[in-house]
Image (cartoon, rainbow over all chains, first blue to last red; front, top):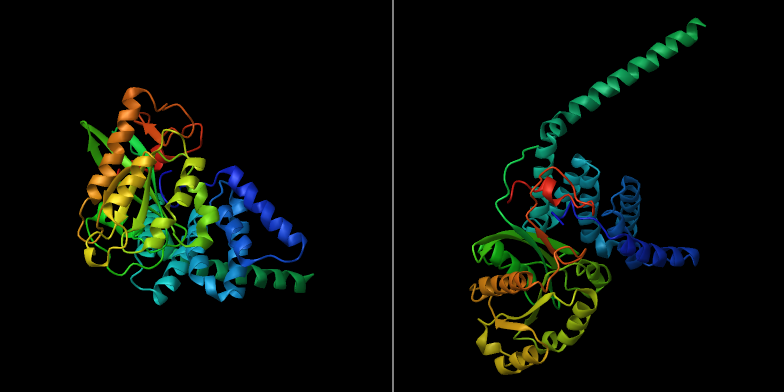
Length: 154
Length: 215
């Protein structure tokens, strides 16, 4: 029970909301509420695969259910931060703040995420992330080129 | 990982509950930041705040979960009641409906917390005397009948805000001293001094590890 990113869902709660979601899924009639309740639990799971699933469900809600967008953005930020996908998490926070600039709850979340990044020593890395991606892309191109050359030789 | 000494002896878990718009987040903000948030949008899901206080010479870290009042969040916010040592139940003295819903909030609290959980009733917005819709006497009687602590407070002026949070902690601390609150119970909502930083407990709760900044 340390903070908003460290807190984890009780397995009983996860099971409870999973059951509701799956019952609705079976009938092919999932309400945004059931999907949100379930994903809210998933992104607080101890397991990365659950968090990942929660993010996918929230992204789908974000596309299909406009009314709840601020809720979905908030929990997308939490889910991504818990997976250490800090750039994505901060992107969601930024998107939220562009609509509600002074929202204290989201400003606090932003601070919490940045603190966690500092602890992980990743603040600098996120900034360098762009460069790394560029290098990665360059290497990718190089490998493809090399393969192409090899193929032509054979 | 730093292994510096903790500067608190206990962690108490609190929840803040009550209807939408009664000022739960503003009470939390006033308590943790000593500031009034004039423009307070609806809370999404739950918000978290913390502050270290002192009771009988013991430093105690309060970890406070402020729940969204909107009905659509209620199914999941209920799961935050589990293991709360203190529950601050808030209504708005200028809106009778928020007072009328107290029995439903109380039922939830009783069902989802421990018998030892301290429940504190707060009538917020007492600075708006002219718009009062619930008398002090009536609420006070309700609190007495249900064994709750009670004050009227104002998140705006800060009146009685500190008192409500501190009195709750005193009562919890008393329960520990009297042995009514079992610290070893899984969901007591109280953790004793985490004396071995860097070690996680059996619940997988990493509070001790991640929180040695003691902020």
